[in-house]
Length: 253
Image (cartoon, rainbow, N blue to C red):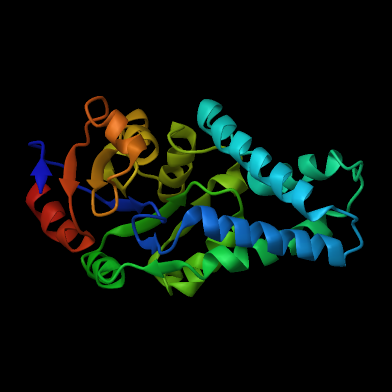
């Protein structure tokens, strides 16, 4: 546990989801390839004539572009937008949104099966709730329904006062606006809240921009993106496991 000296009276704790409360098990490229095929299957069954190999290649290209674009301006374009843009390349410009959403549901059903709750997540949230902390969740994600499914799959919903996704808000962490929406809901000041997450560029930088105390969870944070920013974005505190959080908060207050 690494801590900058501080004394604050925290009213609320905000959590990230993926890599923080839940973790992904499997090969992401392989799982996404399978998920893309399920998307293709669903769209084909809806009557769209999409050559499989070309569709999969273009799907991969569009998703890679999407990942880059959303990190450059903090806007959340959503996977619905990506698929609509993709289909436009086949002159399918008037596909009903319900058809696309059904395809996305089939796609995410594949990835959702590879997400699992961290062993200490529920106990940590339960402990914080008993101590009187208000709890919220902010997730960067391309699809709101996917996040809601993952939250329910992990039986986490009842711990949180509010769940906010970038897909629903159209803006991503580290934009301070998405943090301020949570703070406004609680009617508290940034200094009264802490943000817990695994991503330096989203969770820790976002907390800093919004004026929150930042707590970096490093259990699954050894990624190229975090390594590149480790000397530049410094959290207020670092923990290796969620179970360390109640002790850290007690020490800080």
